[in-house]
Image (cartoon, rainbow, N blue to C red; front, side):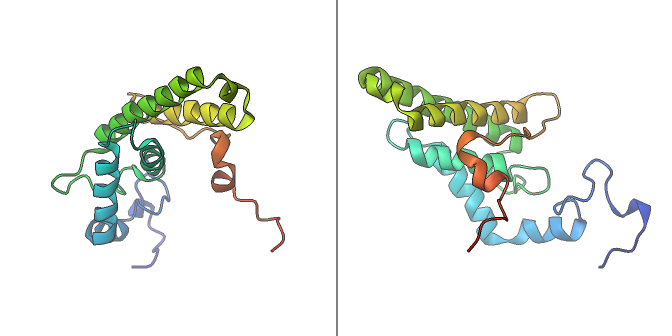
Length: 161
């Protein structure tokens, strides 16, 4: 149904978010590939951080992007709640960061590498976002993106093709 202009058409807490509309919520809940993606994210987060650090980080970033009310298909059997998947992502991402720290202790030249420092700063920012998702207070995305997310966070539309 098209927007009717009724004041009660949108939930005030969700505003005009694309996933606030009841038709969108029903559609998201029936998209099998989205449900499979949520299962894949959850399975990836349950992997061993020493063996799969990059995959776990990618899955944690998907939690940051997609674990939102009415968007995350948690009501399906076997899929964690938003709070539980965000908590799992936070714990596993902390382990990934720890593994990278260990590697830097073994290879001290890494600490001088600007890319390594940017990675560690980005991991800190990603962990803060995940921590805010599991806290009692309402979360907000930071104005500034995690260091390695700049292109995704604020797409630069001024670049030439």
